[in-house]
Image (tube, rainbow, N blue to C red; front, side, top):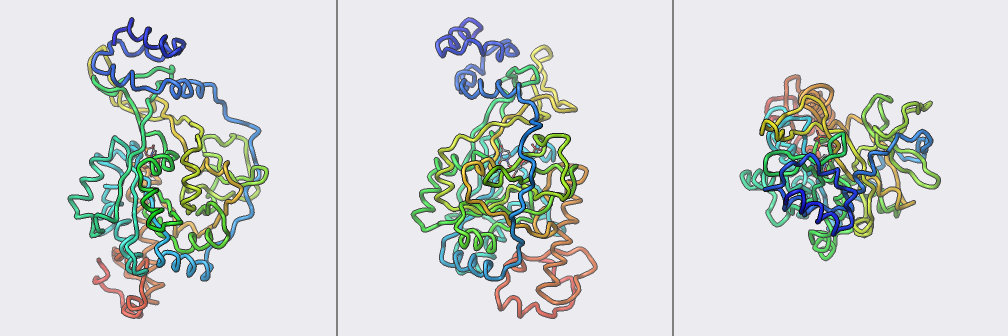
Length: 440
Ligand code: UTP
């Protein structure tokens, strides 16, 4: 597509005013298919976000009607529902993991302390352990993007699905959107491709529905979904208590939360918006906003009903823009450049924006050390080393709960059965002294 055809093309779509978006693409040869595949309505919406300013008047009252975790009855209810085949898990793993700098999908990162199990392996083994406890093969769906779908599937194939049965696991893809540079222009990631990224974890509902998996699960009797993010190895892929509370309270959604550590922590916060709890993402929180007590943090972990997920698949979630460091093709040198700092806007929908669509939301607050320490970057607070320390602290606690003994002094890791122990397993491990045989 040369410049002349581009102009004609935009004219035919009544979008000539978007012409400047294309001015960084001197030669469309090779990428014209990608250019004509662009959804110009969405591109226009992406452009309109350049005028977005942080609000100074948004909701400022922390949501206070949350409940504390630790209710045995809710735990039992959730377990019963899982035993009766009504619960499935979705792992959201479509992100690019650019800050981590790992060469494959983030879920393939070897994170466990001793055996260096990948995030995917950790969660797969927990699904198996929860299934063994409930005498059910529990369904697992994994959201990927076109940028990491193949590598993710290969990771499962090469590892024999970590002993999950193949029929238990489904993969589905989210779409991508083009990046725009800070001058509101499209650019290339290499000589043959436009720079694009996955369109945010909010696309899970639409993508899950259009993949046909939602229909299959519905036909198989699934009523409740547990959703977790791939980058948090402390997450429970099947959270009995959260599911139990969702079912008991007859809400659409139950959010799993803990208190934000401080205003400096990069997490969204849960605030009261008129008659419902909603989330403000951390980079959209007004700078001057302070609270007398830290609000509940949004961890993007939740349980929701399958019927509400279906409803949300038709809902147009708003787009947000985030700064990203992303490789770009420099046509003058014909080289791909890896930038040192953020150089572009990525456009995403967020799954927690569904909160605007329902008044029926519950929030459960858990001890942070039990549920949240995401892997985000190759260095710093959310580096592999720090995540491993958090995993260790959690496993020490679980070890002590199951065995009623002090945990081993040396590095160790637990089998997934410690997370979902059966009666026999508990009896076997009760009072076992610390030993290297805990390495599993
Ligand atoms: P993050 O926003 O932390 O991004 O994703 P990321 O892609 O993992 O890493 P960076 O920002 O490029 O370094 C939080 C969660 O949402 C998922 C990620 O896989 C992760 O589980 N996600 C993010 C998607 O599934 N799709 C997306 O488009 C973005």
